[in-house]
Image 1 (cartoon, rainbow, N blue to C red):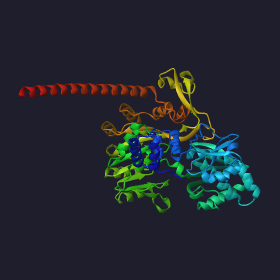
Image 2 (cartoon, helix red, strand yellow):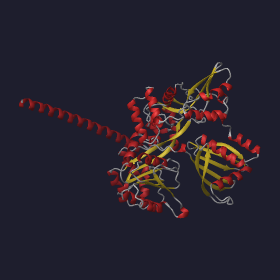
Image 3 (cartoon, one colour):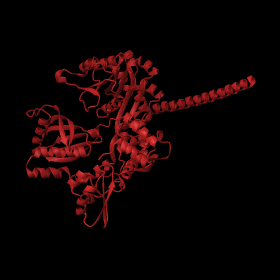
Length: 595
Protein backbone atom coordinates (compact mmCIF):
# COMPACT_ATOMS: atom_id res chain seq x y z
CA UNK A 1 0.00 0.00 0.00
CA UNK A 2 1.53 3.28 -1.12
CA UNK A 3 1.03 6.53 0.78
CA UNK A 4 -0.41 9.51 -1.09
CA UNK A 5 1.51 12.80 -0.97
CA UNK A 6 -1.11 14.25 1.40
CA UNK A 7 -0.90 11.25 3.77
CA UNK A 8 2.90 11.47 3.77
CA UNK A 9 2.78 15.23 4.48
CA UNK A 10 0.29 14.76 7.34
CA UNK A 11 2.41 11.97 8.80
CA UNK A 12 5.61 14.06 8.69
CA UNK A 13 3.82 16.99 10.34
CA UNK A 14 2.34 14.71 13.04
CA UNK A 15 5.81 13.36 13.76
CA UNK A 16 7.28 16.92 13.91
CA UNK A 17 9.57 16.25 10.93
CA UNK A 18 8.03 19.24 9.13
CA UNK A 19 6.20 22.37 10.19
CA UNK A 20 2.65 22.58 8.83
CA UNK A 21 3.61 25.61 6.72
CA UNK A 22 6.64 23.73 5.32
CA UNK A 23 4.47 20.74 4.41
CA UNK A 24 1.90 22.95 2.63
CA UNK A 25 4.64 24.76 0.70
CA UNK A 26 6.34 21.45 -0.19
CA UNK A 27 3.05 19.99 -1.48
CA UNK A 28 2.48 23.07 -3.68
CA UNK A 29 6.06 23.03 -4.99
CA UNK A 30 5.99 19.28 -5.68
CA UNK A 31 2.74 19.70 -7.61
CA UNK A 32 4.16 22.67 -9.56
CA UNK A 33 7.33 20.73 -10.46
CA UNK A 34 5.26 17.60 -11.20
CA UNK A 35 7.22 15.33 -8.88
CA UNK A 36 6.19 13.30 -5.83
CA UNK A 37 6.42 14.91 -2.39
CA UNK A 38 9.11 12.35 -1.47
CA UNK A 39 11.26 13.38 -4.48
CA UNK A 40 10.78 17.08 -3.73
CA UNK A 41 11.75 16.73 -0.05
CA UNK A 42 14.95 14.89 -0.98
CA UNK A 43 15.95 17.22 -3.85
CA UNK A 44 15.30 20.40 -1.86
CA UNK A 45 17.28 19.00 1.13
CA UNK A 46 14.32 19.53 3.47
CA UNK A 47 14.62 15.95 4.77
CA UNK A 48 16.97 13.00 4.28
CA UNK A 49 15.92 9.50 3.19
CA UNK A 50 16.32 8.25 6.74
CA UNK A 51 14.16 10.99 8.27
CA UNK A 52 11.38 10.31 5.77
CA UNK A 53 11.69 6.58 6.49
CA UNK A 54 11.46 7.22 10.23
CA UNK A 55 8.43 9.46 9.69
CA UNK A 56 6.59 6.78 7.68
CA UNK A 57 7.53 4.11 10.25
CA UNK A 58 6.04 6.26 13.05
CA UNK A 59 2.89 6.70 10.98
CA UNK A 60 2.66 2.89 10.64
CA UNK A 61 3.48 2.57 14.38
CA UNK A 62 6.43 0.23 13.83
CA UNK A 63 10.24 0.76 14.11
CA UNK A 64 12.34 2.02 11.19
CA UNK A 65 15.02 -0.31 9.76
CA UNK A 66 17.85 1.44 7.94
CA UNK A 67 19.07 -1.16 5.44
CA UNK A 68 22.08 1.01 4.58
CA UNK A 69 23.44 1.16 8.14
CA UNK A 70 22.77 -2.50 8.92
CA UNK A 71 22.95 -4.54 5.72
CA UNK A 72 21.56 -8.10 6.07
CA UNK A 73 23.83 -10.87 4.81
CA UNK A 74 22.87 -12.99 1.80
CA UNK A 75 22.38 -16.01 4.10
CA UNK A 76 19.94 -14.04 6.28
CA UNK A 77 17.93 -12.78 3.32
CA UNK A 78 17.61 -16.19 1.61
CA UNK A 79 15.90 -17.72 4.67
CA UNK A 80 12.61 -16.41 3.27
CA UNK A 81 11.57 -18.18 0.02
CA UNK A 82 11.96 -15.95 -3.02
CA UNK A 83 8.27 -16.01 -4.05
CA UNK A 84 7.12 -14.93 -0.57
CA UNK A 85 9.86 -12.31 -0.23
CA UNK A 86 9.05 -10.71 -3.58
CA UNK A 87 5.26 -10.87 -3.25
CA UNK A 88 5.10 -9.48 0.30
CA UNK A 89 8.34 -7.42 0.06
CA UNK A 90 9.85 -9.11 3.13
CA UNK A 91 13.49 -8.97 4.24
CA UNK A 92 15.17 -10.45 7.34
CA UNK A 93 16.69 -7.41 9.06
CA UNK A 94 18.01 -8.83 12.36
CA UNK A 95 17.95 -12.20 14.05
CA UNK A 96 19.04 -13.62 17.43
CA UNK A 97 18.29 -16.75 19.48
CA UNK A 98 14.86 -15.57 20.60
CA UNK A 99 13.53 -13.24 17.91
CA UNK A 100 13.71 -12.15 14.27
CA UNK A 101 12.93 -8.72 12.85
CA UNK A 102 11.31 -8.67 9.39
CA UNK A 103 11.25 -5.40 7.48
CA UNK A 104 9.13 -4.34 4.48
CA UNK A 105 7.89 -1.25 2.65
CA UNK A 106 4.28 -2.41 3.08
CA UNK A 107 1.93 -1.15 5.79
CA UNK A 108 0.19 -4.42 6.69
CA UNK A 109 2.59 -7.30 7.34
CA UNK A 110 0.51 -9.17 9.96
CA UNK A 111 -1.06 -11.38 7.28
CA UNK A 112 2.39 -12.91 6.67
CA UNK A 113 2.98 -13.67 10.36
CA UNK A 114 1.79 -17.30 10.29
CA UNK A 115 4.03 -18.15 7.31
CA UNK A 116 7.00 -16.45 8.98
CA UNK A 117 6.42 -18.36 12.26
CA UNK A 118 6.71 -21.61 10.32
CA UNK A 119 10.02 -20.39 8.83
CA UNK A 120 11.39 -19.26 12.23
CA UNK A 121 9.86 -21.74 14.74
CA UNK A 122 10.01 -20.76 18.39
CA UNK A 123 11.08 -17.18 17.64
CA UNK A 124 9.19 -13.97 18.27
CA UNK A 125 8.38 -12.18 14.99
CA UNK A 126 8.90 -8.38 15.03
CA UNK A 127 8.12 -6.04 12.14
CA UNK A 128 9.85 -2.88 10.89
CA UNK A 129 9.55 -0.47 7.96
CA UNK A 130 12.19 0.23 5.26
CA UNK A 131 12.17 2.41 2.16
CA UNK A 132 11.19 0.79 -1.17
CA UNK A 133 14.52 1.50 -2.89
CA UNK A 134 16.41 -0.19 -0.05
CA UNK A 135 14.12 -3.25 -0.17
CA UNK A 136 14.71 -3.51 -3.95
CA UNK A 137 18.49 -3.51 -3.41
CA UNK A 138 18.32 -6.30 -0.83
CA UNK A 139 16.00 -8.46 -2.97
CA UNK A 140 18.77 -8.57 -5.61
CA UNK A 141 20.34 -11.30 -3.42
CA UNK A 142 17.84 -13.71 -4.97
CA UNK A 143 19.28 -13.15 -8.45
CA UNK A 144 21.77 -15.83 -9.49
CA UNK A 145 24.55 -15.01 -11.97
CA UNK A 146 23.29 -14.78 -15.56
CA UNK A 147 25.59 -17.54 -16.77
CA UNK A 148 24.26 -19.91 -14.07
CA UNK A 149 20.72 -19.24 -15.25
CA UNK A 150 21.78 -19.60 -18.90
CA UNK A 151 23.27 -23.05 -18.13
CA UNK A 152 20.06 -24.14 -16.40
CA UNK A 153 17.92 -22.99 -19.36
CA UNK A 154 20.20 -24.73 -21.89
CA UNK A 155 20.21 -27.94 -19.82
CA UNK A 156 16.40 -28.06 -19.90
CA UNK A 157 16.49 -27.83 -23.75
CA UNK A 158 13.04 -26.21 -23.92
CA UNK A 159 12.59 -22.61 -25.07
CA UNK A 160 16.22 -21.50 -24.96
CA UNK A 161 16.07 -18.19 -26.90
CA UNK A 162 12.97 -16.61 -25.27
CA UNK A 163 13.98 -17.66 -21.74
CA UNK A 164 17.54 -16.33 -22.12
CA UNK A 165 16.16 -13.01 -23.45
CA UNK A 166 13.72 -12.81 -20.51
CA UNK A 167 16.53 -13.38 -17.99
CA UNK A 168 18.76 -10.75 -19.62
CA UNK A 169 15.93 -8.20 -19.64
CA UNK A 170 14.98 -8.92 -16.01
CA UNK A 171 18.56 -8.32 -14.86
CA UNK A 172 18.84 -5.19 -17.00
CA UNK A 173 15.74 -3.71 -15.35
CA UNK A 174 16.87 -4.70 -11.84
CA UNK A 175 20.22 -2.96 -12.34
CA UNK A 176 18.62 0.08 -14.02
CA UNK A 177 20.45 -0.51 -17.28
CA UNK A 178 20.16 2.01 -20.11
CA UNK A 179 21.60 -0.21 -22.90
CA UNK A 180 22.04 -3.97 -23.41
CA UNK A 181 24.89 -5.01 -25.76
CA UNK A 182 25.01 -8.43 -27.49
CA UNK A 183 28.58 -8.76 -28.83
CA UNK A 184 29.40 -11.98 -30.75
CA UNK A 185 32.95 -13.30 -30.59
CA UNK A 186 34.53 -16.41 -32.12
CA UNK A 187 33.07 -19.01 -29.70
CA UNK A 188 30.67 -17.10 -27.46
CA UNK A 189 28.54 -13.98 -27.19
CA UNK A 190 29.32 -11.38 -24.51
CA UNK A 191 26.36 -9.62 -22.85
CA UNK A 192 27.19 -6.18 -21.45
CA UNK A 193 25.02 -3.66 -19.57
CA UNK A 194 25.53 0.10 -19.58
CA UNK A 195 24.77 1.24 -16.04
CA UNK A 196 25.19 4.93 -15.13
CA UNK A 197 26.98 5.51 -18.43
CA UNK A 198 29.61 2.78 -17.96
CA UNK A 199 29.62 -0.65 -19.66
CA UNK A 200 30.09 -3.77 -17.53
CA UNK A 201 30.01 -7.44 -18.49
CA UNK A 202 26.86 -9.28 -17.37
CA UNK A 203 27.36 -12.77 -18.79
CA UNK A 204 28.28 -14.97 -21.79
CA UNK A 205 26.21 -17.22 -24.08
CA UNK A 206 27.57 -20.17 -26.15
CA UNK A 207 27.68 -19.06 -29.82
CA UNK A 208 25.48 -21.92 -31.10
CA UNK A 209 22.38 -20.48 -29.39
CA UNK A 210 22.87 -16.92 -30.63
CA UNK A 211 21.25 -17.24 -34.07
CA UNK A 212 17.90 -18.20 -32.48
CA UNK A 213 18.19 -15.25 -30.08
CA UNK A 214 18.91 -12.84 -32.96
CA UNK A 215 15.99 -14.18 -35.00
CA UNK A 216 13.58 -13.88 -32.08
CA UNK A 217 14.61 -10.27 -31.45
CA UNK A 218 14.32 -9.50 -35.18
CA UNK A 219 10.77 -10.90 -35.28
CA UNK A 220 9.78 -8.87 -32.21
CA UNK A 221 11.24 -5.72 -33.81
CA UNK A 222 9.61 -6.44 -37.22
CA UNK A 223 13.00 -6.74 -38.95
CA UNK A 224 14.00 -9.06 -41.80
CA UNK A 225 15.29 -12.39 -40.45
CA UNK A 226 16.75 -13.44 -43.83
CA UNK A 227 19.05 -10.39 -44.05
CA UNK A 228 22.35 -10.93 -42.21
CA UNK A 229 24.49 -8.34 -44.01
CA UNK A 230 22.61 -5.03 -43.56
CA UNK A 231 22.29 -2.67 -40.62
CA UNK A 232 18.69 -2.64 -39.33
CA UNK A 233 16.80 -0.58 -36.75
CA UNK A 234 13.56 -1.39 -34.99
CA UNK A 235 11.57 -1.15 -31.76
CA UNK A 236 10.42 -3.79 -29.28
CA UNK A 237 7.97 -3.74 -26.38
CA UNK A 238 8.72 -6.16 -23.52
CA UNK A 239 6.65 -7.01 -20.46
CA UNK A 240 8.41 -7.37 -17.12
CA UNK A 241 6.39 -7.92 -13.93
CA UNK A 242 3.30 -6.09 -15.21
CA UNK A 243 5.51 -3.23 -16.50
CA UNK A 244 5.70 -2.49 -20.21
CA UNK A 245 9.21 -1.56 -21.32
CA UNK A 246 9.92 -0.12 -24.75
CA UNK A 247 13.33 -0.63 -26.36
CA UNK A 248 15.03 0.69 -29.49
CA UNK A 249 16.97 -2.00 -31.31
CA UNK A 250 20.01 -1.43 -33.50
CA UNK A 251 21.57 -4.36 -35.38
CA UNK A 252 24.87 -4.19 -37.29
CA UNK A 253 26.73 -7.09 -39.04
CA UNK A 254 30.35 -7.73 -37.96
CA UNK A 255 32.96 -10.38 -38.85
CA UNK A 256 31.82 -12.60 -35.95
CA UNK A 257 28.07 -12.12 -36.39
CA UNK A 258 25.36 -9.53 -35.87
CA UNK A 259 25.85 -7.20 -32.90
CA UNK A 260 22.72 -5.92 -31.20
CA UNK A 261 22.22 -2.93 -28.91
CA UNK A 262 18.91 -2.48 -27.09
CA UNK A 263 18.28 1.01 -25.67
CA UNK A 264 15.77 0.56 -22.84
CA UNK A 265 13.20 3.31 -22.41
CA UNK A 266 12.06 2.18 -18.95
CA UNK A 267 10.45 4.52 -16.43
CA UNK A 268 13.63 4.56 -14.28
CA UNK A 269 15.41 6.33 -17.17
CA UNK A 270 13.01 9.29 -17.18
CA UNK A 271 14.12 11.69 -14.44
CA UNK A 272 12.17 14.55 -16.02
CA UNK A 273 11.89 17.04 -13.15
CA UNK A 274 14.18 20.10 -13.27
CA UNK A 275 15.04 19.36 -9.64
CA UNK A 276 16.49 15.96 -10.69
CA UNK A 277 19.00 17.30 -13.20
CA UNK A 278 21.66 18.75 -10.88
CA UNK A 279 21.25 22.40 -11.93
CA UNK A 280 22.77 25.08 -9.72
CA UNK A 281 20.05 27.35 -8.32
CA UNK A 282 21.02 30.31 -10.54
CA UNK A 283 21.03 28.09 -13.65
CA UNK A 284 17.65 26.60 -12.80
CA UNK A 285 16.24 30.12 -12.40
CA UNK A 286 17.78 31.16 -15.73
CA UNK A 287 16.28 28.14 -17.51
CA UNK A 288 12.85 28.76 -15.98
CA UNK A 289 12.97 32.44 -16.94
CA UNK A 290 13.89 31.69 -20.57
CA UNK A 291 11.21 28.97 -20.78
CA UNK A 292 8.54 31.36 -19.49
CA UNK A 293 9.04 33.79 -22.39
CA UNK A 294 6.38 33.78 -25.14
CA UNK A 295 8.88 33.30 -27.99
CA UNK A 296 12.56 32.70 -28.68
CA UNK A 297 14.90 29.72 -28.88
CA UNK A 298 16.54 27.57 -26.18
CA UNK A 299 19.35 25.27 -27.37
CA UNK A 300 20.85 22.38 -25.40
CA UNK A 301 24.16 21.08 -26.79
CA UNK A 302 26.39 18.12 -26.09
CA UNK A 303 27.42 14.72 -27.48
CA UNK A 304 25.07 11.73 -27.87
CA UNK A 305 24.02 10.34 -24.49
CA UNK A 306 24.68 13.53 -22.50
CA UNK A 307 21.06 13.95 -21.37
CA UNK A 308 20.03 16.78 -23.73
CA UNK A 309 16.54 15.44 -24.46
CA UNK A 310 15.94 14.69 -20.79
CA UNK A 311 16.70 18.34 -19.95
CA UNK A 312 14.24 19.59 -22.58
CA UNK A 313 11.57 17.13 -21.40
CA UNK A 314 12.07 18.48 -17.85
CA UNK A 315 11.56 22.03 -19.14
CA UNK A 316 8.33 21.03 -20.91
CA UNK A 317 7.11 19.25 -17.81
CA UNK A 318 7.79 22.31 -15.64
CA UNK A 319 5.96 24.81 -17.91
CA UNK A 320 3.03 22.68 -19.05
CA UNK A 321 -0.49 23.90 -18.37
CA UNK A 322 -3.80 23.16 -20.15
CA UNK A 323 -3.94 26.66 -21.69
CA UNK A 324 -0.98 26.12 -24.03
CA UNK A 325 -0.35 23.85 -27.03
CA UNK A 326 2.96 21.95 -26.91
CA UNK A 327 4.01 19.98 -30.01
CA UNK A 328 7.22 18.01 -30.50
CA UNK A 329 8.91 16.32 -33.46
CA UNK A 330 11.49 13.71 -32.44
CA UNK A 331 13.58 10.85 -33.76
CA UNK A 332 12.69 8.77 -31.85
CA UNK A 333 9.97 9.75 -29.37
CA UNK A 334 11.65 8.41 -26.23
CA UNK A 335 8.88 8.95 -23.68
CA UNK A 336 5.26 10.06 -23.84
CA UNK A 337 4.78 13.37 -22.05
CA UNK A 338 1.27 14.08 -20.80
CA UNK A 339 -0.45 17.01 -22.46
CA UNK A 340 1.88 17.21 -25.49
CA UNK A 341 1.42 16.28 -29.15
CA UNK A 342 4.46 14.18 -30.07
CA UNK A 343 5.37 13.41 -33.70
CA UNK A 344 7.76 10.64 -34.72
CA UNK A 345 10.12 11.34 -37.65
CA UNK A 346 9.60 8.77 -40.41
CA UNK A 347 12.05 9.04 -43.31
CA UNK A 348 10.31 6.23 -45.22
CA UNK A 349 7.14 8.33 -45.55
CA UNK A 350 9.08 11.57 -46.05
CA UNK A 351 8.27 12.94 -42.58
CA UNK A 352 11.64 14.59 -41.84
CA UNK A 353 12.41 17.16 -39.14
CA UNK A 354 12.10 19.97 -41.68
CA UNK A 355 8.81 18.82 -43.25
CA UNK A 356 7.31 17.98 -39.87
CA UNK A 357 8.31 21.36 -38.49
CA UNK A 358 6.70 23.15 -41.44
CA UNK A 359 3.44 21.35 -40.62
CA UNK A 360 3.71 21.99 -36.88
CA UNK A 361 3.84 25.78 -37.24
CA UNK A 362 0.48 25.58 -39.03
CA UNK A 363 -1.00 23.68 -36.07
CA UNK A 364 -1.19 26.78 -33.84
CA UNK A 365 1.43 25.69 -31.27
CA UNK A 366 2.67 27.85 -28.41
CA UNK A 367 5.76 25.75 -27.72
CA UNK A 368 7.65 23.55 -30.20
CA UNK A 369 10.34 20.98 -29.38
CA UNK A 370 12.57 19.87 -32.27
CA UNK A 371 14.46 16.70 -31.33
CA UNK A 372 17.64 17.83 -33.09
CA UNK A 373 18.77 20.53 -35.52
CA UNK A 374 20.73 18.46 -38.06
CA UNK A 375 20.76 20.55 -41.24
CA UNK A 376 20.38 24.04 -42.69
CA UNK A 377 16.71 23.60 -43.60
CA UNK A 378 15.68 22.53 -40.09
CA UNK A 379 17.77 25.34 -38.58
CA UNK A 380 16.13 27.98 -40.83
CA UNK A 381 12.58 26.79 -40.09
CA UNK A 382 13.39 26.64 -36.35
CA UNK A 383 14.67 30.22 -36.33
CA UNK A 384 11.64 31.44 -38.31
CA UNK A 385 9.30 29.64 -35.91
CA UNK A 386 10.99 31.37 -32.97
CA UNK A 387 10.68 34.71 -34.81
CA UNK A 388 6.96 34.31 -35.43
CA UNK A 389 5.82 34.02 -31.84
CA UNK A 390 6.72 30.48 -30.77
CA UNK A 391 8.99 29.27 -27.99
CA UNK A 392 11.26 26.73 -29.67
CA UNK A 393 13.43 24.19 -27.82
CA UNK A 394 15.96 21.99 -29.55
CA UNK A 395 19.17 20.00 -29.19
CA UNK A 396 22.32 20.58 -31.21
CA UNK A 397 25.63 18.72 -31.46
CA UNK A 398 28.49 20.97 -30.30
CA UNK A 399 31.37 20.50 -27.87
CA UNK A 400 30.41 23.47 -25.72
CA UNK A 401 27.86 26.28 -25.50
CA UNK A 402 30.01 28.93 -27.21
CA UNK A 403 30.76 26.75 -30.28
CA UNK A 404 27.08 26.27 -31.13
CA UNK A 405 26.59 29.92 -32.21
CA UNK A 406 29.34 30.03 -34.91
CA UNK A 407 28.24 26.55 -36.05
CA UNK A 408 24.68 27.77 -36.66
CA UNK A 409 26.02 30.79 -38.56
CA UNK A 410 28.23 28.44 -40.63
CA UNK A 411 25.11 26.41 -41.46
CA UNK A 412 23.70 29.49 -43.16
CA UNK A 413 21.66 31.22 -40.42
CA UNK A 414 21.96 35.00 -40.73
CA UNK A 415 23.59 36.51 -37.61
CA UNK A 416 20.83 39.15 -37.25
CA UNK A 417 18.15 36.38 -37.19
CA UNK A 418 20.09 34.34 -34.63
CA UNK A 419 20.63 37.42 -32.45
CA UNK A 420 16.89 38.16 -32.57
CA UNK A 421 15.72 34.69 -31.59
CA UNK A 422 18.29 32.98 -29.37
CA UNK A 423 17.55 33.28 -25.63
CA UNK A 424 19.73 30.67 -23.95
CA UNK A 425 22.41 28.11 -24.88
CA UNK A 426 23.15 25.22 -22.50
CA UNK A 427 25.97 22.68 -22.82
CA UNK A 428 25.87 19.57 -20.64
CA UNK A 429 27.53 16.27 -19.76
CA UNK A 430 26.65 13.49 -17.30
CA UNK A 431 28.78 12.28 -14.39
CA UNK A 432 28.15 9.33 -12.08
CA UNK A 433 27.06 10.24 -8.56
CA UNK A 434 28.64 8.79 -5.42
CA UNK A 435 26.48 6.01 -3.93
CA UNK A 436 24.56 7.37 -0.92
CA UNK A 437 24.66 3.98 0.79
CA UNK A 438 28.46 3.72 1.01
CA UNK A 439 29.64 7.32 0.61
CA UNK A 440 32.37 8.46 2.97
CA UNK A 441 34.60 11.53 3.24
CA UNK A 442 38.39 11.67 3.28
CA UNK A 443 40.95 14.42 3.80
CA UNK A 444 43.24 14.75 0.78
CA UNK A 445 46.32 16.96 0.38
CA UNK A 446 46.69 19.19 -2.68
CA UNK A 447 49.95 17.39 -3.51
CA UNK A 448 48.06 14.11 -3.70
CA UNK A 449 45.35 15.64 -5.92
CA UNK A 450 48.01 17.08 -8.26
CA UNK A 451 49.17 13.56 -9.18
CA UNK A 452 46.00 13.11 -11.26
CA UNK A 453 45.06 16.78 -11.62
CA UNK A 454 48.12 19.05 -12.04
CA UNK A 455 46.01 22.25 -12.11
CA UNK A 456 44.73 21.63 -8.55
CA UNK A 457 46.40 24.78 -7.11
CA UNK A 458 44.06 26.97 -9.18
CA UNK A 459 40.91 25.37 -7.74
CA UNK A 460 41.71 24.43 -4.15
CA UNK A 461 42.80 27.22 -1.80
CA UNK A 462 43.65 25.06 1.25
CA UNK A 463 46.59 22.67 1.61
CA UNK A 464 44.11 19.93 2.44
CA UNK A 465 40.51 19.45 1.33
CA UNK A 466 37.62 17.06 1.99
CA UNK A 467 36.52 14.88 -0.92
CA UNK A 468 33.99 12.06 -1.08
CA UNK A 469 33.93 8.59 -2.60
CA UNK A 470 31.95 5.35 -2.40
CA UNK A 471 33.45 2.27 -0.75
CA UNK A 472 31.37 -0.10 -2.89
CA UNK A 473 28.33 -1.96 -1.52
CA UNK A 474 25.38 -4.18 -2.46
CA UNK A 475 23.35 -1.12 -3.47
CA UNK A 476 25.87 0.04 -6.11
CA UNK A 477 27.13 -3.44 -7.11
CA UNK A 478 30.54 -2.59 -5.64
CA UNK A 479 31.23 0.36 -7.98
CA UNK A 480 30.92 3.19 -5.43
CA UNK A 481 28.59 5.04 -7.84
CA UNK A 482 24.83 5.00 -8.23
CA UNK A 483 22.89 7.24 -10.60
CA UNK A 484 24.03 10.20 -12.69
CA UNK A 485 23.78 13.95 -12.54
CA UNK A 486 24.36 16.71 -15.07
CA UNK A 487 27.14 19.28 -15.22
CA UNK A 488 26.23 22.40 -17.15
CA UNK A 489 27.53 25.47 -18.97
CA UNK A 490 25.05 28.34 -19.51
CA UNK A 491 25.28 31.28 -21.91
CA UNK A 492 22.47 33.79 -21.46
CA UNK A 493 21.88 35.91 -24.56
CA UNK A 494 22.10 39.43 -23.16
CA UNK A 495 21.97 42.67 -25.18
CA UNK A 496 25.80 42.72 -25.25
CA UNK A 497 25.83 39.11 -26.53
CA UNK A 498 23.27 39.98 -29.25
CA UNK A 499 25.52 42.85 -30.41
CA UNK A 500 28.47 40.45 -30.56
CA UNK A 501 26.53 37.80 -32.56
CA UNK A 502 25.80 40.45 -35.22
CA UNK A 503 29.57 40.65 -35.83
CA UNK A 504 29.86 36.94 -36.73
CA UNK A 505 32.18 36.17 -33.76
CA UNK A 506 34.40 33.17 -33.07
CA UNK A 507 33.58 30.77 -30.22
CA UNK A 508 36.51 32.24 -28.23
CA UNK A 509 35.05 35.75 -28.47
CA UNK A 510 31.62 34.50 -27.39
CA UNK A 511 33.01 32.60 -24.42
CA UNK A 512 35.17 35.55 -23.36
CA UNK A 513 32.09 37.77 -23.14
CA UNK A 514 30.04 35.03 -21.47
CA UNK A 515 32.74 34.68 -18.79
CA UNK A 516 32.69 38.42 -18.17
CA UNK A 517 28.91 38.20 -17.74
CA UNK A 518 29.15 35.42 -15.16
CA UNK A 519 29.10 32.10 -17.07
CA UNK A 520 31.11 29.23 -15.62
CA UNK A 521 32.51 26.25 -17.53
CA UNK A 522 31.38 22.63 -17.40
CA UNK A 523 34.43 21.86 -15.26
CA UNK A 524 33.72 24.61 -12.72
CA UNK A 525 30.07 23.56 -12.43
CA UNK A 526 31.21 19.98 -11.91
CA UNK A 527 33.81 21.01 -9.34
CA UNK A 528 31.05 22.46 -7.17
CA UNK A 529 29.39 19.04 -7.27
CA UNK A 530 32.73 17.37 -6.38
CA UNK A 531 33.19 19.63 -3.34
CA UNK A 532 29.60 19.03 -2.20
CA UNK A 533 30.12 15.25 -2.35
CA UNK A 534 27.78 14.48 -5.27
CA UNK A 535 30.53 13.09 -7.52
CA UNK A 536 34.28 12.48 -7.58
CA UNK A 537 37.15 14.41 -9.12
CA UNK A 538 38.04 11.35 -11.23
CA UNK A 539 34.55 11.38 -12.79
CA UNK A 540 34.77 15.10 -13.53
CA UNK A 541 38.21 14.84 -15.16
CA UNK A 542 36.82 12.02 -17.33
CA UNK A 543 34.19 14.28 -18.97
CA UNK A 544 35.48 17.88 -18.83
CA UNK A 545 38.68 19.91 -19.20
CA UNK A 546 39.76 22.50 -16.66
CA UNK A 547 39.71 26.13 -17.91
CA UNK A 548 43.07 27.71 -18.72
CA UNK A 549 44.69 30.62 -16.82
CA UNK A 550 43.19 33.26 -19.14
CA UNK A 551 39.67 31.96 -18.50
CA UNK A 552 40.27 31.84 -14.76
CA UNK A 553 41.57 35.42 -14.83
CA UNK A 554 38.38 36.54 -16.57
CA UNK A 555 36.36 34.69 -13.94
CA UNK A 556 38.34 36.28 -11.10
CA UNK A 557 37.90 39.73 -12.64
CA UNK A 558 34.19 39.03 -12.92
CA UNK A 559 34.03 38.09 -9.24
CA UNK A 560 35.81 41.33 -8.33
CA UNK A 561 33.38 43.28 -10.52
CA UNK A 562 30.47 41.58 -8.78
CA UNK A 563 31.88 42.51 -5.36
CA UNK A 564 32.38 46.11 -6.47
CA UNK A 565 28.87 46.22 -7.89
CA UNK A 566 27.45 44.83 -4.64
CA UNK A 567 29.47 47.34 -2.59
CA UNK A 568 28.18 50.18 -4.80
CA UNK A 569 24.58 48.99 -4.38
CA UNK A 570 25.03 48.71 -0.59
CA UNK A 571 26.55 52.20 -0.46
CA UNK A 572 23.70 53.61 -2.58
CA UNK A 573 21.20 51.91 -0.31
CA UNK A 574 22.84 53.44 2.77
CA UNK A 575 22.86 56.90 1.15
CA UNK A 576 19.22 56.49 0.18
CA UNK A 577 18.31 55.41 3.70
CA UNK A 578 20.21 58.39 5.15
CA UNK A 579 18.41 60.82 2.81
CA UNK A 580 15.05 59.26 3.65
CA UNK A 581 15.77 59.65 7.38
CA UNK A 582 16.79 63.30 6.90
CA UNK A 583 13.66 63.94 4.87
CA UNK A 584 11.50 62.25 7.51
CA UNK A 585 13.10 64.34 10.28
CA UNK A 586 12.55 67.50 8.20
CA UNK A 587 8.88 66.61 7.74
CA UNK A 588 8.48 66.09 11.48
CA UNK A 589 10.00 69.52 12.19
CA UNK A 590 7.64 71.15 9.67
CA UNK A 591 4.66 69.49 11.35
CA UNK A 592 5.80 70.75 14.77
CA UNK A 593 6.10 74.32 13.41
CA UNK A 594 2.58 74.14 12.00
CA UNK A 595 1.23 72.93 15.33
